[in-house]
Length: 292
Image (cartoon, rainbow, N blue to C red; front, side):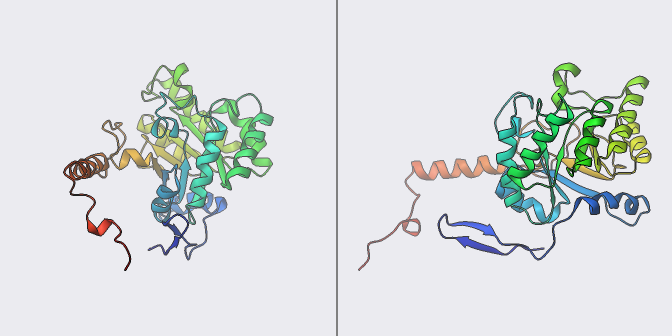
């Protein structure tokens, strides 16, 4: 589907007008689980987005846009997601909502904004939703977060769960390696997903687990599973958009690179720099002549 653009004359930037489609809803996404299980529905498509322009480009193709706390590394160059703040998430979440008209926008709740109590989680989630207009929040953790998920869901805040490799717990986990290699850990991850789904999460992200765990969770819970380094048998998939576009030299094992945007940008900037130094840019086409 093509997007119609108008020009904001105050900025000369293309800004999309409302597309001829209705934004997807949380109940509609949750209901896709049954259709997918019966072979009558397509898997859910999810990508991260942090800016207006990326949201504009990704939105027509995605069911969900995740304003991930991965922006800590992708946008700010931080060593992990741990330092990310509510204010960062609110600013980028608002941008993504402004740039999208179709996908359900989900915002990560950053480390330290929800773990202390359900009440703290509600205050943080309400702040994010008020500031951004997003439809849902995502939080990490298993059974320990079930009460919080229920508390939010019962108060009108849709929640996406996140089990398996949970990046906010990188210091406790000791790294980003795949989880679930022992029987005990595998059983714990499945149990965590079941607890979160039973508490009211409308979808569950499964990250960085050995494949049988993702398959078992997908069979066991009544809400969609979204895999990242999990299994093609999940009800949907999510990736960091910058990873799949090839904007970084290092690519995680679970990422398929669909392009080499880093190489493309580097080559074009090299050409630009050469033309500036040779004084072949700008030309008459890019400068203004006097009138008369």
